[in-house]
Length: 95
Image (cartoon, rainbow, N blue to C red; front, side, top):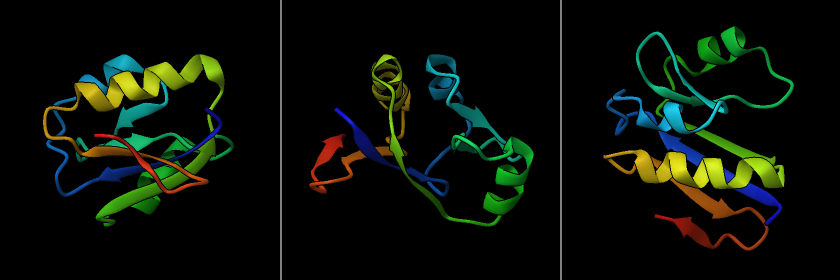
C-alpha cells in the first residue's frame, strides 16, 4: 500500500486498549489514550507532546508486514477513534 495517514482522535478514544493488543505501533499513554509510535521518535517525548492534543495525525510509510496490523488495530477500536487514509490520494480507507 505504501504511505498511510493515520489519525487518532484522542477525544473519542476511551483507552480500552484492544488497538494496542493488535500492533506494537500503538500504545496507550498515561491518560490511557492511544498513541501511534512514530518511527524515530522517543516514545516518552511523543507521549508528552500529545498530552493535551485532541488528535494525533501521522503520515508514515508502513512496512508491508505491519500494514495488516494497523488495520486490525483500527478495526479493534470499539469507538472508531483510529481513521486510516491513503496519504497520497486522501481516500479514507478505514472506517
